[in-house]
Image (cartoon, rainbow, N blue to C red; front, side, top):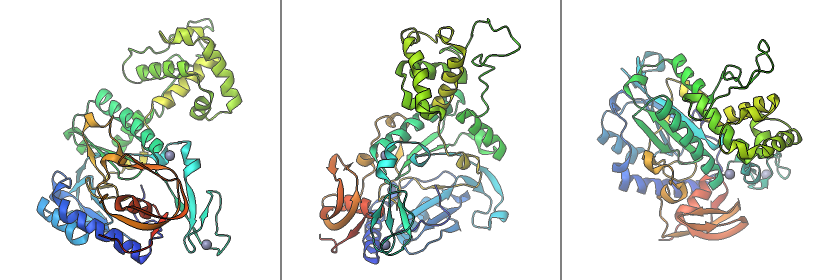
Length: 423
Ligand SMILES: [Zn+2]
Ligand SMILES: [Zn+2]
């Protein structure tokens, strides 16, 4: 989540005006559905206008009505507010007087090693609009700069959602937080914000400790009995963690069972960053014992070396893959919920805790017009689904698409408008 400067965009002037007018109409009609941050008059606001490359920040908005007016008037491509509360929100950073901050988490498909990325991410020349594979670094036709196209697919979003579910289990189960706000980022992930009183005044180091706990940083497999203590007798029976144990012990036990039953060499080699052939050897051992493992944590059935490895893989698997910088930053700006994301045209939609499991971004966060169509030239797009309808794969074609779909492709830098919108 880089928000200091807007990334390079291929939008032509016409494309930009088109997207801008759609955003404008959206805010005119829906400004009253935007999320209103608590203690709004103590927050800093910031936004990217359509025309500017840098963010306009240190803004002060003192009421929900003013926030709605602000959205209609400025029609932002992206809009943010501080997780922090300040005495003087509009003052320069060093004079704001920090009074506390919500605890923010960011889960982004960028940080997850989804295998589909290799298939769907590519590059485009900023000058001549030619597609290139990810490894290319300059346009061979015109020597133009190549722009990364970070596609977002259902698998990426599903992986991000699973990490979010894991994170929430840590936050509710282990840490006991109650006021949890979840938002789809509007692009490749989810934002989770804790608003409980106890977290508001936590400093950077205390927040870092929470990050370490959730990511399993510094966990000792030796203390858990999964790595042999050389001082003890080698014949000591392994007394590893069990599924009913609290906190990380139970998490490692449950993850170990899941991994042992699945015994997948690709997954194991990814989790441990080891060679596939080596992972295959461990998987063979696990397979021989998978029946015992389906009933209990059968640590005693495995050789010491496999126990240590399974423990390590389980710790990695059980951790939540959060963006660690976001959470420890006490001055962080976060995207204003229920506003449009300029990288997709999708809504950064708030989600109730009990709705997360079934949340489908391409279904529930598509809010731009779907009944009108527009003609675009699509450079390249993998197969995707919006509002239940399938599109693509596309390779350099001219096609008429619903406005919401065309906007998604234009915002992703893979399509350009052919004719002005019809009504
Ligand atoms: Zn070029
Ligand atoms: Zn993907």
